Length: 523
Image (cartoon, rainbow, N blue to C red; front, side, top):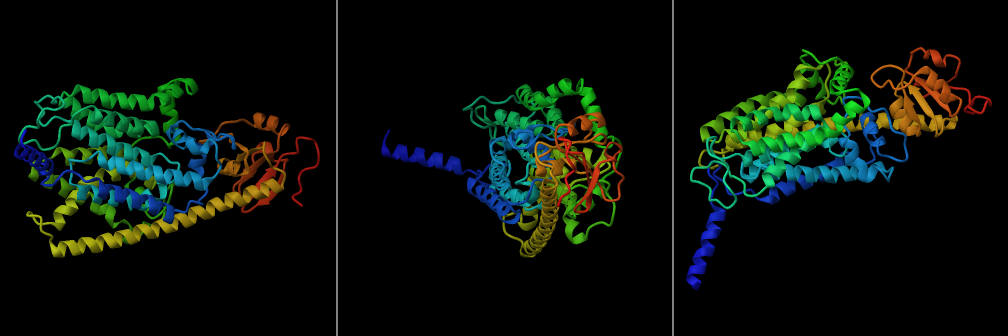
């Protein structure tokens, strides 16, 4: 081949790589903006969400399952062990909370990058970077990024699964998937993959969701399953169902081992969550946005509109994104994540009578790419020129939104830090009273207090019931036992004759020492 022919071939390949993708009007996604967003997300977690923040109640349940330095807390029916396995590489050998927070911050930053990369070719790089920034700057994302909690990982799994599935769909519903290496036909609106990567991505994203929260995974995946069955895309259907099955396998197996069956575990999970049914929780979720980690029961005034206006803007921007996509002839990359976001939010808006901001993280993540695309449409004229007035208003709105999110994050972090310091101080007092490992705490807040004290925890009633008065009495003959009561509450019947002590704002009743000696006086 002559030099001129080689030059022509190289130029042709370069032009092919730089060709604008049909339907998007942009070049293929660049990794650098996505990597920058993920890196800033990680850095913001480490700077704004202090690595010294102690473990919270739910984190204690998950982390204690894999530690060797603390007894395992009661693991209730709705929970899945995905988080426990996620933190095991650090928590299984180290008691350092700072190390665990750093590990999770780095891991969540990497997860965000990979989840955004799954959408390459579906939206331009600037849209995906904007989507990542929109999701990453929510206070709930920044707060829970370095925490041992499942919802963020369901959100990232949802982004992976939906993005790869859209890339794996054939160009037309009546056209079978092309084999690797086959040229893309003219007029295709999004890329058809070559090789097994998209199918593996669908399976991996579905497995991650189900590994963390099986019920959430089913809700997110429902529109996807309908779509791939309607398209008669059996490999995608198999990948989706296979991923869900693989991720939920342990949870289902445990249902039969501990609860007598899947139906029994689901019924117990429903009971613990207050009985799933027809409950409108829109106002509860709105109250929680002001900085309440768990709103149960959810009462009080609504937060300031300055903190919640973006929540009302989301459905409007989603509708605009869908209209823009329909007009541009690329409906599926916008309509599918919007549908999955709706089904992801549905159980938490329509079926439970309490709220937590983290419950809606998968919906927020799936809304981010279409909403970012809608914002780009508002900021740019059809020929790509910036609209000065619209761009200025959007910039001001983004600045106000970011300031509000940082204000809520600061408030939440300060409140949670104080609560967890109180648990640590109470643990120190209990140690001084003679309650040291091996030991048992029962009653009010026994799970977090037990973890900070190094004791096992137990309850005879409520959502975390795992013992009986007889078992507590038997334990008191072997190890130090204390019952904790809430302020103003009566002591439990089995502890009425025990020695009361004040520990902060709580009353602790100390069982007689197991060696038969005098009760600890605390002097």
